[in-house]
Each structure stands twice: as structure tokens, then as C-alpha cells.
Image (cartoon, rainbow, N blue to C red; front, side, top):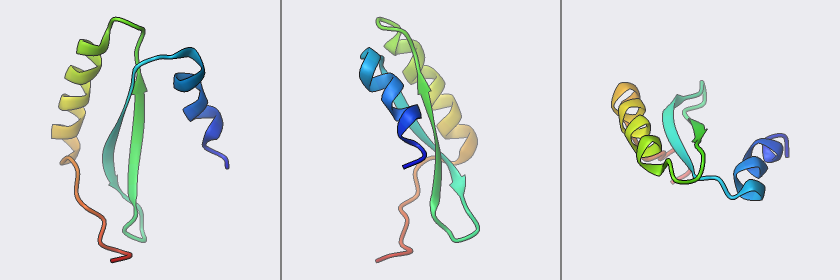
Length: 66
């Protein structure tokens, strides 16, 4: 899995992380970004997450495989 090294950083170091949906690929599958912060800085993480979610349209359920 090519994405595992990126996910592992937050898990191994115990950092707060948030995944934000930012669009869909050419097949209609969701694309997201992950943002991380230092411990104790969760409030800033959620504020940035809210800004990004508003900018990119927020969560939209993928019905591709329903």
C-alpha cells in the first residue's frame, strides 16, 4: 500500500490528524488530504479543517459502489 508511510506518521508519533475531503477523481472516487499538528494544538487543526472543508465543498457521500 503506497499510502501507508504517510498514515503511519500520525499513528507512530501519536499526533492529532484530520482527513479532509477535497474532491473526486475522474472515476468519481473521493480524494482527501490529511493534516497533522503537534500535541495540544488540536483546536488549530479543527479550525484549519473547517476552512478547508468549506473551501472544497465538504463531505459528499460516494455512491459509485452503492
